[in-house]
Image (tube, rainbow, N blue to C red):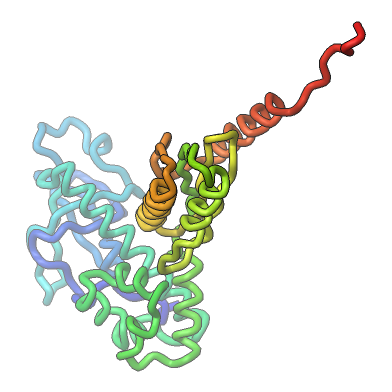
Length: 301
């Protein structure tokens, strides 16, 4: 277990004015004793005078054992290991900024710890070999891991990472950091009253369907009811998926206009939910029912 304990960052102690995430371990009339979660649980202290800007009537209402808090570093004595912290000097913006940084670091730390346990390599060695170097090169190892999902060799190639470690690292990165696929849809009306008519519409839709991108996305086009069509795809990158679907719409528009037709975007590309899909299915069923030939009265009656 000792081999799996390690700070998240290369520096053993935070710098003065750094924002850090702590967990409260003990509270008394002097202040609160805490551990710094990002620095392998080294101890720090929030003095009573640094808990709040307001007059303190009950210390237990301000801070409680077990809670995590965002604090700023006032003083660091590296020789004695004393770290003085302040809660009252932290703003709401500071809290959000620190929580985002901590959550990203926690995600990286979790992946590194799992690789350490699986490959039986001390966690600190993994950080020394490549972890802390990624922090320097990419400002945060979280960004490096996200990049490694697409181009692992470009991110890890320059470091001395064994094949088994690399395999386990990429396995964990892909499992934990690949964003879930989102469904993206656009609703368009395509018409053509020229001589080629329906053939021109088919060619235009086919041209949009064949438009490629990197990474490739599977484009599907369904007829709801003439002249309304829905264009759909799924993508792990929401922004890239929406941009590609917009390009598909543009390609269809160019193709149908060249044939003397027109295209109108009813709903621009956007992400859709399960409910949106259910509503689309119901609408298509309703349209199909309305268009279905219904037997009328017998002519002899």
